[in-house]
Length: 467
Image (tube, rainbow, N blue to C red; front, side):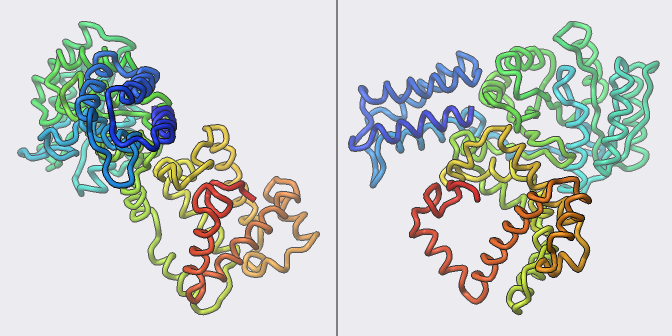
């Protein structure tokens, strides 16, 4: 949905130039584009109708302020409406989990098989351990899939939490009761309960999870849903809402959601906030869901706040300061430094993770790369790292030593052609030259020069052809 809606609105901004206000005649064209983008994104039809009606009511007759044209003004209105549909400004509690209860706070994970409940349980455990400093216990009440119990054991260890054993011959309520007793006796702050799912909604599953809910009395009951399900997510959400007093939604696989309609539809159907979003397969790939920021992503505005948070968590501040001091002292930028920069980018989610959070105005044509192109670029980055690792410490410090025979040895060690080694050295020389310009105030001059070349998307911007 993100690229479709952003592209359609971008075209509108260009076509509506020169008009002083949003009128009945021009608003119809705008809303048609928005409606088509939402339907293509698999947003439920009642949600689309309500959304369009609200946007039209807010937009009609609105004066266009300052240097904006009607298309630009509409983007602002659509952004607010998107955020409101996903829960912004509705008086709901702040995003995140409510743990205000006598420990252990019990969190029940509900959803269909394949939605990502088990992985999300571990990611949530990781979030609670790392961000909220809680002592967390997980348990699987899925007695129908023995592999799910072992999977939860493995991913819980990766999350830095503790796992309570269960087996397929136990009753789910007995498992839950024993886990809760253990959590109380060993002073755990939070108990996360992974429940069984089915390939579809059935009465037996709903009766079982309702019984678990009655036994545990959880403070949070989270509905885990695959963001790629589209309309199916709406039907599933409605069934779980009727069976359980849901307190929140977790959208999984949001990074792979080409359509994105679930985020709009599920919030409206369930009436409960989207609390978390799964944004990668990594154990820390879970974000607290923020409607305003997600609306910005959908409209191609990126998510700079999330990018800053990612930088704060992923960047080694001491290493960055060390490099800055090294450049200031006049010491050269070497291949070890180049490799460190690649490692820092990988910590922040790789190229795809960074591009997703940058506004489309900054990424230019690079932001329009498809999954195949981004995957190819990620492979190129990994290849560069492999080539550097095949060099000796001396070669990394003094790249000028790398001549023909050394290039052949490095290429063989990395499993790449010699041409790839040459390409890496050329790219390194370009970065080395850029780093020299940053020394002693050269950075400001370089930025001004780039600004004079047309800005982002122009010859000097990030949208230009890569060299």
